[in-house]
Image (tube, rainbow, N blue to C red; front, side, top):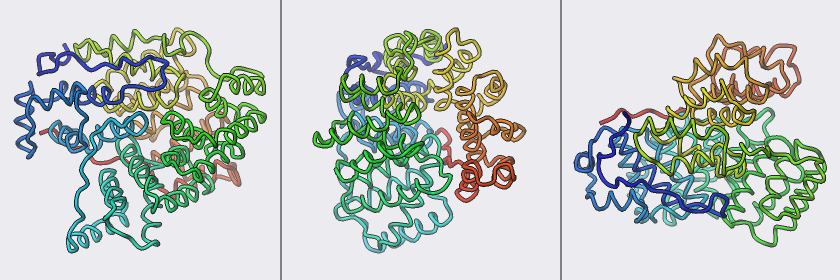
Length: 509
């Protein structure tokens, strides 16, 4: 049962030997692991068959190169990752988006690809004509956005008129706010690439801030946090201001972005006092603003963490043993399912599950679940999360399973998600609504108006309705019950913006 270990070297899977609670992780090993297990689960039995398939697609790569890439002995070029996707029949960007995410946060881990020379003038004109038409039709894929970002940020790359640049980046921002899976991760990286260019950065900041300020906007966290991918102190100071003064998605997005900046070591030391004051100001306002501040305080110092806890009057995070990364609740159930799916002893999947099931390191949990979602373990782990949710044994195990499902659930999990929805608690039910939205859309027969009547569920209900283009969305936008409320504003925003974006699926070769 499972994948056959004899499908080619290396038989020993990459592992991340860094401390569980250490400062960083082994990003190169994680990228190597994703390539290795993706190939092992693919249609080509053994390295010779895989190299032959690569050759059919114009990629010359011998067994020794594959071994070095899949053990982490050599950094992987992005073109190699694209070749894996193509030969394995994976959606363009499924592996690359996850690899870019881990490289951006914990790298450098990918090879420094040589900069391609700019296109000849006529080729550039044709490319711009095609792009303009596709952007107007909302038909640009995440990989095309990423290619455009690379061309725009090239030292000798294309230049666009400011009005066109603003418009196109504005479209990219709103698409990032409502995209799913690899469609999201590739767009997210395109934005990160652009915000890292000093000549384009201000345009990205303006478009992100404008989109975040729209009445009823959802998906704000995803785009506001990308601004922390720069080292510009002016931009980072704006995010610090959001932590101290903003609320809701804007504050949480800024806080998550700064959390990643701290993780990367990109937060200048002279900004730490300002961030400290913003954290303390937020903590005084109670849990809604204090919990994001608490997460930041944990990364700055134990003394600041103690001050925040004192202001809140409580320790605002799960504290039971099942919530710790060292011993997450129901870990064994997930490991059993992973072993049955693969037939492999896989230390990396255990490491990723520990991080994905624990709230100890939010940025690691996010990246770990993105890697698992891009891996061939996704289906087995999503099914296990449903089983744990149905019989969690502990309160925290159910909450962790619901979080996992927001990343890993797909169409085959929809029936069980729908069945479990009424029996879950408010906060977990909100996560399940989002999981349904990410798994292909909420079933049309599900009554989202009923869920929206619950204050704990209203934001997730509107999000699910908007992402799914659900028939209840017009009611949420026009019913007198919602007139003048944030719920109505969000419903109208979704009607204007459009439903979830998923990029095309490629068939296996």
